[in-house]
Image (cartoon, rainbow, N blue to C red; front, side, top):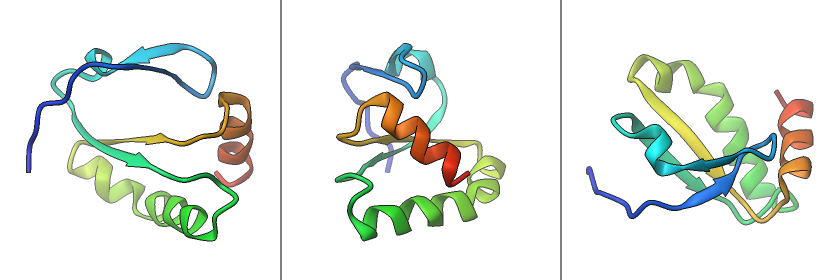
Length: 81
């Protein structure tokens, strides 16, 4: 299902403000998690990592949003590849 979203901004892992407009024309898979303290969210991130190549082959970019600040998110991402 393709839907149009209203533009919004959020900081990426490195503190850079990004907008949905930055990804215009790309296929996006938006993930909103409850935080890395939740085992379900950690498993979901593992599944996305394990299937990353399949998403890339379909030209789909994964954007993950959560309650952690960008520094904590980056640390988790780097520790869990």
